[in-house]
Image 1: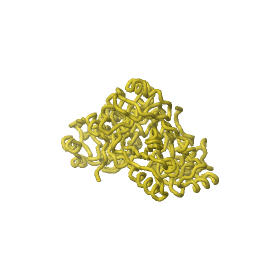
Image 2 (image 1 turned 180 degrees about the vertical axis):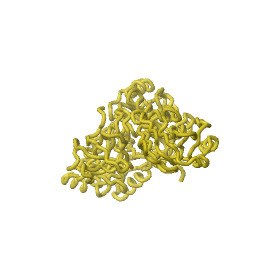
Image 3 (image 1 turned 90 degrees about the vertical axis):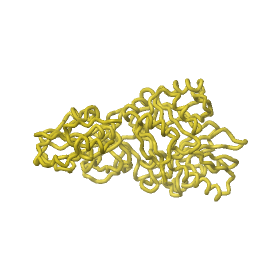
Image 4 (image 1 turned 45 degrees about the vertical axis):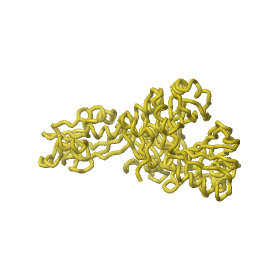
Length: 364
Length: 126
């Protein structure tokens, strides 16, 4: 099967972007340089094409029950316009995906939700929702609209001004973690004030064939997935497939540092397993490391103590463009490597000194 | 996009270049630095170390990738560009000049013959 392409694929190519495969999609990884793009988002503004993210809509009399039983957070708290971060776990509490849940305005008097699975997870999540709906006999419609809506993310300290200008001020009426339908560059957009870079910013869900109009309305740095990765890494945000993966890196939300997305007062798949985990604690926790010696931490590198004994491993790492320091994320022994511990990261066979920290690496 | 490929050097398919007279200098090509993106770390051998033709002599890392460095010739390392330890971005800024990596005293002159010429290397990357 060929790679799926975002609607702006050709426009990005004309702009000389380089591309990468991510979650079955061919996506722009770099337009100018990761450093340039990263700095633009931290200091002014950048725009990302994140149309590879999934969009699944759930509506109907039992939509709240279906969403609540398949996500870890308490969806019943959401009013139309609210957003919520949540995990999707299996019976054993292992994270299958992490997602943002939006409550849309009611449809025909019934609750209506949109959730955003990670790239390449849309078909699997659609199947999961439909099969559980049928198994539980719930009355809700489930639609995968991933290839109907493009998703663009405008991020950075200047994003609010740019967005306000393109929307007659409508976008700045919403607070962080809220969302609304409004016109952006004349296009009807489901606009949320969220993002994954640590900066203030907006995500615009717009019809696939109107993505170019919205993208072109913002005079700021185009950014690829490379900068998106370094930005989220500095914030300690999880990357699906890298920092957790049901087969290669099976982790529950407590290990992954997102236990706050788990509401044990709700009934969801994986709840009982997670209640036990919450009670008993976890052997390994998601932590940050900062190397004190030359080198770059990477996915898969082992972390050991001064005697060379295993303490854990890294799942992500890079040279932080903001700090100009080598930073990594990974799972370390809860008891033996709490924040403040001096450890060694094994870089191509050589143990390099590093300090364990609690992410984020930068204050935002 | 067109990349700089100086005619006075020889090349490896893995994107290293070498000069060919006397003590040779070795680095990575304009194409390679562009593919890697922002170079943030370079690991090089020490003076006096031996390198082997087609053997790894170090590592170059960008923000997004790690890449082994392959030696175009065999010989003894007689110079190391230590400026790259503090300023690895020189590899991006001037890959054939200030971004050079090591100097080698070759042990066999015949090894240059099967390296790519500038024209052959240009064909490979275009």
